[in-house]
Length: 121
Length: 139
Image 1 (cartoon, rainbow over the protein chains, first blue to last red):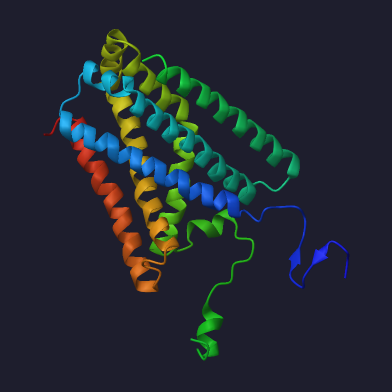
Image 2 (spheres, one colour):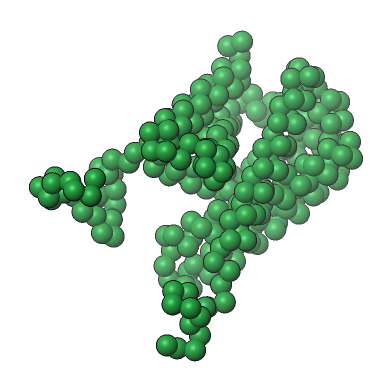
């Protein structure tokens, strides 16, 4: 038995076996569900939206932080999902790695834009 | 099921490294359809993130940009694209909640899982219809 093999089944290659990503995918999903319901409840209370009402909602510090958390969750969630798509369909390592790097850069840029939008209000 | 007659097994097509031609006529169960649509809707939302953020920006930046946002989103083409995105979101949302429930072992049983898949797909379409009718001013 080679020295890097621990136990009869597991080949230790330094990977995390995806558990961390699996949990993050679910936690971020729950954050976004909560945010969706907050928006929905706000829509039900205020009825037809106006600019004052809409911008006032996001001017509130608590809502701003909740929105930031929801958007941050969205980007992390998207990273894991898109990474899974590349891992499933793109086999050549060079192409896969390139796409993964581009995905990360794209999402970081989106996150910066989101921060800019939120803290302008 | 272990003792199923051999001749039934023999008639089934066997797919290894499934190709595009085979994929088209491959009959997925409802859970499979919901699953691939979950992936496709997620990918579409990912690709159109800048567009969604742009709309969010326009709606929030100022009174003037809010008016521009309203004018922009009253365009018929923008409405159709937005409705497509709304379906993507609603399907992804409903199917995602189904997965969270499956994770805590709710509805894992085969017939239940099939029913919940049909329910989730229908709910996504129905909620999109509700939003769509509102968008096009039917109520």
